[in-house]
Length: 113
Ligand code: AMP
Image (cartoon, rainbow, N blue to C red):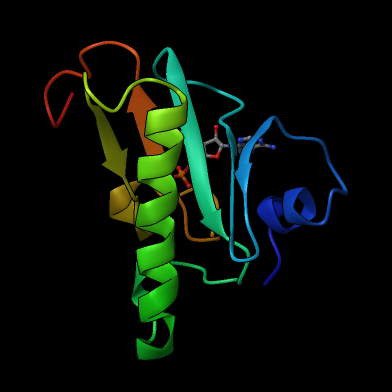
């Protein structure tokens, strides 16, 4: 089912886009949890990690390549950053379109608050 992220892909609502290619889009999180908070999404609608299929193997690789490129472009690759994907209720997922959060710009702290 389409989510708000599909509307961002289709330019139906605005977003602060930092990266785009034919398969992947990345934009600033509207409610940042760190000085730099980017969401990296596939253009294909995949609701959760559980819905990734073997045909998506290359796409997931493309997403990680995008993450590394974005981190380099933003100058946070050397200091480092955290990549998070929440899944379903216990993971705290709110938008059911697969995404990686990139958190950067300061020490991100412990794995769990
Ligand atoms: P998650 O809880 O992992 O599903 O994360 C969803 C993220 O999407 C949250 O960090 C929200 O702040 C972010 N978000 C929701 N709507 C928008 C939007 N229109 N533009 C940018 N980020 C959004």
